Image (cartoon, rainbow, N blue to C red; front, side, top):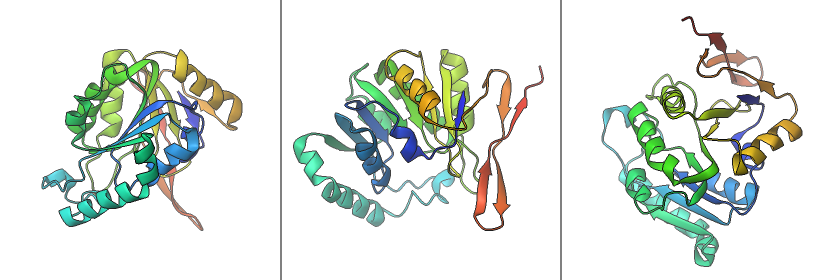
Length: 241
């Protein structure tokens, strides 16, 4: 695994152009715009239910506002991306991720970026639903590979369990912002191979961690910087067997 001092916006700039990409969890579409500008995909599927969910683990989540706000976000996304929607470069799908997955052919995506419900069960479901949609050599990526003091974050455990159970390789983790992004793949050919080569050759101060997550445990830590506020510090330790 390569530890990269990048933000997720800079990470997607290392993807090849003209890919078929799906973003799971859109909210207001800010990162969607970063994807479009950063790697110029052939098509971007923007998938989000834009639905308030009255469940306990999402009540403190700022991305689970009341329905009126969700409706407003959806309407704004349609307006902001109207030219790309008209050209067919963007497809906005208002549906829960597992429902939208049923309308996507297996092997038809190059990259999927998962950033929806962060509970363990939801992340595992998204991984199970969307990994088959990615073509050989493609990438499964996502956001918020960390823990949260108020919201249930099961991303770390879910991604690691999926990697170990399905023979995937953990490729990269960002450290350029407090909520890291992650990338995994079933193999290192194609898009995944180009992506990793670009990280290694274009990004300075990359650190490789071997044996992750099989033999290494990850514990995100946060420290308060005198002038920059709270900062993320990746922490790793050997798993005792």
